[in-house]
Image (tube, rainbow, N blue to C red):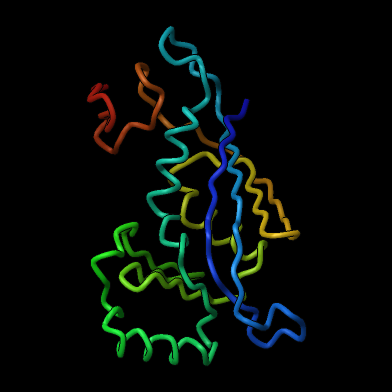
Length: 189
């Protein structure tokens, strides 16, 4: 069975080298749908696959670096210009109003710079590219069965084979940490 939740992300990007309107810097509201699969945890207090609000918290902790961010491909010449402007403006290393930041990440597909609301990608950040990045960031945290990302009139979806079960708290249903302790309610295995 699956638990399903959605997140909204506001971001700006462009398709560097693309021969169409998307080559210009523009913004979107993206909607990410995450489907998590596992057995229903049949305890009197849980009776669900995974609490949807906990899926959101787990995903948002990483993905908030994409919200109100500029997403550019690593070879885009606009990247250097933006960083120069941020330096001159005094916000390259952060600003007091920049409070919605998650921990920085660096993967094979993307690197986040939360202090300046920037994500640099290996590939053009299409809806398909976003799905690849999201899966890479969350695959060890959630049993992702399907990701769907819509941005404007564009949409893509990808299904994944789930072949493991995440050990969860019998009191609240969320994943236990590496020590068998629930980070939400303190239950110990």
